Image (cartoon, rainbow, N blue to C red):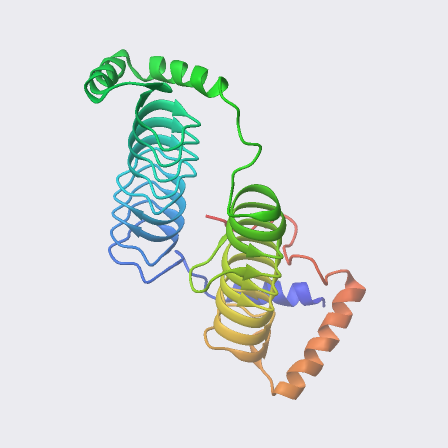
Length: 315
């Protein structure tokens, strides 16, 4: 019998969580939501408040239909925005307020249908207007309908140079939508990375940065970790799925506040355990080494434990 077979049997007989989340108040019909209040149909996010139909973000308030936004408030239909206020249909904007239909704008207020602007006020389709004329023209365009607005907005977007990648305070990195990164390769929608690779939607909640980690999806505060998915605060761990505060853990599924666990499922405060069985520290290291050696012979070591036809639920 292979390790993956034993692990699969343990997974099948262990109770699984129906919805994943932590320290939420008044949040129904959400999944992978943490530290949030009064939210509905929100997923893969932290510190949301009074939001609905939002996905992937952090510190979002009073917003709807937003994706991958951070520190925004009173926003609707925004994508990849940071620190925006009272915005509608914004994309790749930072510190933009009271604006609609904007792309790649920074530090702008009262802009409509603009792209590529920096520190501007009262601009309509990238043209400067005085305050009264701006308000009048905006109302006129709103009466024309969204199809006419989007058509004109696309013309503006096509008329300006586009950044090849959205980086912010980043050096020696490749990928897209990276903030505060150093020496990281092929990373996307991630923040606070140092010496990492192939990360998607990885950021920080508990600490200051993610370091020396590879191949992770929607995880936070990783260090010396590999092949992690939906993991919060992982250290020197690999092949973990939906685990929180784990150290020296490998091949674990829904394990929390644990260290030195191998092939475990549904544990809380576990230590020196293999397939949910407790060992002494010496016996744990010996048994773990034996299993890894057999896994190498079976071609399992370094692979995800997913039998044919099965896939993990990613929300």
